[in-house]
Length: 185
Image (cartoon, rainbow, N blue to C red; front, side):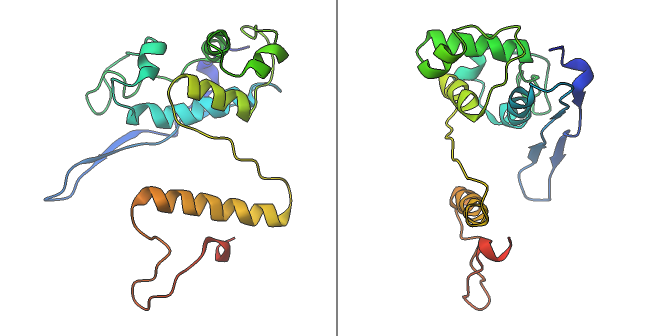
């Protein structure tokens, strides 16, 4: 079944934290979508990503126009902040629409342009293509199952988030020596 209501476990809640003299910070943790079948893991992973991402997008983001986003009042007062991620059927429709718009022509050929209502797996390429079609910046990075590749994965993730933070999280400010993500693996 592609119904999501019975498969959603709320492990992410909206929390507002503030300290005197500092701006309030709102945190959104992802919802967990249980996979009750043998084919929907790609959809469930996308739903978890979107449950964390959607509250961070501005209301003017193209995602909301493409999905007719709205929904109830969220934690931060924006109408979309706790808008639920699309259902599996909605994701399948969005994939078909993205294929019609020219995204992922190989995937469109593979699924013969139709996936809605079918128990067909999707992978990282389909997810990235769909997110790109919805103006969400993303990339697929493949790491093969080898120890050397796993070490590269840890370094890649560490460097990505370190670059996003605007400061050098690896630098030990007391003695000037750096710590490296590979030391953590």
